Amino acid sequence: MDESLRGKQIATLERMLHLNKDGSPDLTLASRSEEIIWKVLVLDTKSRAVLSSVLRVNDLLRCGITVHSLINSKRTPLPEVPVIYFVEPNIDNVLQIIDDLENDRYDSFYINFTASINRELLEEFAKKVSISGRSFKIKQVFDQYLDFIVTEPNLFSLDLPKIFTQFNKAGTDEDTIHSLVDRIANGLLSTIITLENVPLIRAQQGGPAEFVATQLDLKLRDYLSNSRNSPNQSIQQRPVLILLDRNIDLSSMFAHSWIYQCMVSDVFKLQRNTIKLHKYSKDSDKPTLTNYDLDPRDFFWNKYSQLPFPDVVESADAELNTYKNDAREVTNKTGISSLKDIDPSADNDTANIQQAVEKLPELSNRKTTLDMHMDILAALINELQAKNLDKFFEIEQNANDPKTEKEFLELLVQEAERDNSVDKLRTFLILTLLVDLPKEYIDKVKKTFINKYPELNFDSLNYILKFKEHSKLTNISALNDTTTQSSYSSANNNTSALLSGLSSKLYGLTEGKISGGLSSIASKIKNFIPEKKQLPITSVVEAIMDPNNASNTSMQLTDDYLYLDPKARGGHSKPPRRQSYNESLVFVIGGGNYLEYQNLQEWANQPNKPSKKVIYGSTDIMSANDFLLECNELGKSS
Image 1: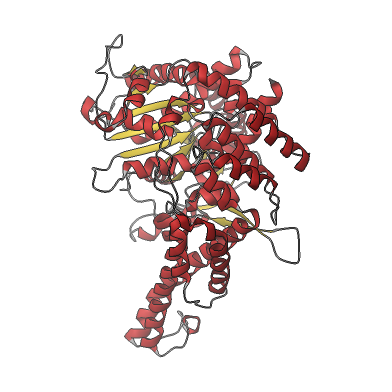
Image 2 (image 1 turned 135 degrees about the vertical axis):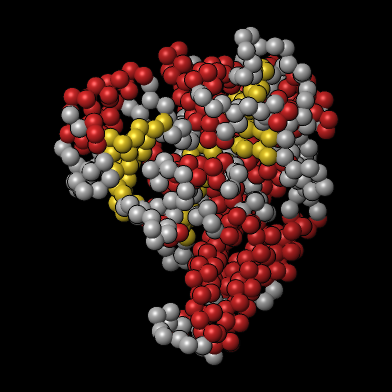
C-alpha cells in the first residue's frame, strides 16, 4: 500500500466507493463469483474538490460508479440503483438526503460525511428518517474524516482562502476568529485520522498557530477517548506536528522559482491537479487556453516535477528518445511501419503482433503524457523569454549582494515583450523584506513604479513596509537573516540567449521532429542554477526534527514553541526540549506554496543522510499573485 498521505486518502476514498467493505474496489479484479454492484455517487462542491484531486472518471468507473452528480443539481431518479453520498455534514445536505429518501429516488442509501457530523444534526437527521418511514433504505452512515485536499504525495490543503487576511485584519471580530480556528483544527483532525498516527504538537506562540494547537489538542483527546481502537505508539515512533503562522516568512510567498512544479504554478495556474495553460501566438495578443489534468500516475511529473527547469528539459528529450526507441522496437518486430497501423481487434496469430498489441496501451499513454509535458515546457520557455523571468529569479537569489539594488533599478525600467510589472513588484517586495533598503532608494523605486505603471496597485508595498518595521521589533525576521544566499557563476550573462535557443529546439520537438543538441543547450543553462538554499520554514523544521544539525538561531527560536501531547493524561508534562523525529506534519496557517513543499522534500531526502518523511500542508496552497492580492487588501485596510 502507498504510505504517502495521498495514497492513504485514495485508499479511504476507494474503500468508501466499495461501500466501506474490505477488499479491492477495482471491478477489473472481481472474480466471476463476486456480484458486481453499480452505484450512483452524489457529491457537494467541497467533496468534489477532495475527490477530483486524486481520482479521475476512469477511476470512478473502475469502482463501479456509473453516474456522479452534485447534490443541489437536477438529478434523474434511479429507484433501482444504490446511492453513495459523500457530502459535508451540514443542514442543507441532510435535508436534501431526506428529500431523496422520501421520494424513493434511489434503492438503498450509503451516507458518508466529509467530516464528523455534530450530535445535534445527527439527532435531527435520525428523527426525520424515522418520520419518513423509510429507515430500512439507509444502509450506512459514516464519518470519513476526509476534509482536506491532497495534490501531491505529501502535500495537502484545507482549501480555506484568505485566512492570512482574516487573521491579520484589524476589523476581524472574535467570533470569526473562533470559527476559523475551529475549521482549521477540524481539517487537521481529518488529516491526522487518515494518517492513523497521533502526533506530538509543537506550535509557534502568540498567534493563530497557538490557538489552533490548543483546539486541535482538545479535539484529538476527545476523539481518542471515544475511539475503541486508538493507535498506541511510543513517543519515539510518533511524528511531530509543527504548526506555524504565515508571518514566519513572507518573502517565499512572492518568490520566483526555477523548479518545474513551482514554475507551472507561478506562470500558469495549477489548482487541484489541473494546469490552466495559456499560450500566445505571434498573430494575436489574446492567449489560447488549454487545461491539462495531472494524474497521480503521471510518470513524468512524478519523476521530474521537483527538478530545476533545465534538468526537466533535458529529461524530456531523453524520455522522448527512449519512447521512440521502444516504439521502433515494437514496429520492427512486427514489420508494421507505425504503431497507428496496429489493429488490436484483428485476429492476429503471430506472437510479435500479440506482444505489440499488449504494449500498445502503455506506449500510447506514455506518448500522451510526453506530448502534454512538451507543450507545457514550450509554453514555459515562451513566458520566460517574454517576461524576462530569469532576471527576477537571479536578483532574488542574490538579494544581499550590494550590486543587486542597482541591477533592480535597471530591470525596473527595462521593456519586455509582455507586461511583467507584477513580477517586478514581487521582486521588490522580496528585497524590501530581506534587505534594509535606504529610504531614498525605496522612494526612488516607488516613484519609478508609479510613473511607469500607473495602473499597478501598491497597497501591498505599504503593508510589507509596516510588516518589516513590526518584525524588527518582534524579531520575526531572525530566520531570514540566517538563511544562506547563494552565488552565481559568470555564465549568467548569456542566459536569455540560451533560453532563446532552447525555445526553438523545444518547438522542434513538440512538432514531432527530433532536434539534436537540446541536451547540450539545457546543460549550459545549468550554470544558472544556484546552490541549494534552505528556506526559513525548513530551518524551523530542521531545528525541531534534527536538533543535532540545526543552527543555534533556529533552535533558540523553536525552544519557545508550545509543546502538547494529546495522548498524555491530565495536564501537560514539561517536555524534553529537544529530541529527534523521523516524521513530521508541517502546517502553515495563512497560505503555503509549492516552493516550501519542494524545499522541505529536498531537505528530508538529502543524499548521504537518513531520509525523513515530511508532509506539508496549509490552509490554502496559493500562487504568488494570490498572496499579493491578500497583501493589497491588508495594505488598503490599514
